[in-house]
Length: 97
Image (tube, rainbow, N blue to C red):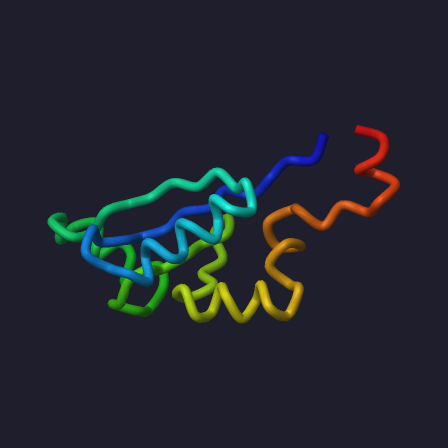
């Protein structure tokens, strides 16, 4: 069984784009860790240091920052997101499950 990547999403409770990012991941059946930076300056600083950005959401697949919701949606539209998430099984692999 392949090892799936660790997905982390830095969010705030009042962010619509954060909700959209989490919804997209959930629709794909991806487990992710949601890290609320809304009231924790240390977590926000960590997010900024890791991503180079201050806005939320900031999404990471393993240690790779992929950006915010718009960036993730663009990866999804181009067909690249599933591969990054380990969801790009061939039809033969699916039929063997």
